[in-house]
Image 1: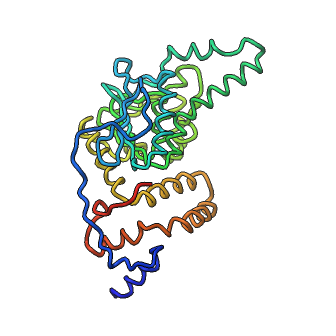
Image 2 (image 1 turned 30 degrees about the horizontal axis):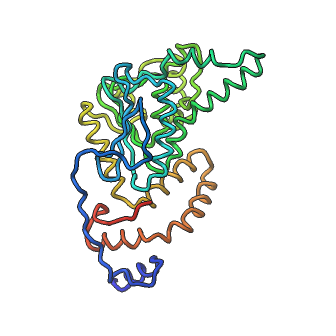
Length: 317
């Protein structure tokens, strides 16, 4: 049996060096206070970004005096941050939360008027083209999270209103505290939600009837119902516990092979909107390269040595 496993490891390993002769070193994660994240330095005005665990970034919506309402600067900074995070080889998972008493009150309504005022004064068609460009820019602020190969965990406490629902719908995992509430608020403001909720939420909760009700009435969805319908996968008693659990799950993700984790996210997002047959073709093409990674023999060797993924020194990706 041992000889068969050794042959398997040699076959999986790109090099000709027998993997059994190169034992995996035990690496304990360092315990240290939050530090500046290893992403491109930017002067963030509406967000706070810190590395709180090894390979884990914590991004906060940080306008607590405005209940983290998303102003135009925040929409731009979200794109900048996730573009950097996507290219950061040290980052393996992201937690996003809100500072203060709310996750977010949604779009900053004081900015909405300025967007409309800046439209061209020519005819209706030209105003429409310009407005469409602005809507697509807003959509990119959340789509960039979905395209980011690093898993994104939303930790929601307090109200999550309007654009906040759009935001968390683009995340991979959603947890909330007992005091959290969710509201698709746009219909109360005289418009249809246009930055992701109507497209992503039906695929998350699995009930078109519930999505229709929430979107057409702006009814508030409380934490217990959010759990029962699948919008969130855990409800925690308070914000402190919520963040501890979210960061713990992010650390567990970060302990796994980044090749495996990022490939899993890419294929989950790809397969969500396509037939099973296309998803299978895509993952076959993906893995014809990714199965040649050094991470597989390292992971198998760790399992044989009765060690966990956190003991494996995976290379950055």
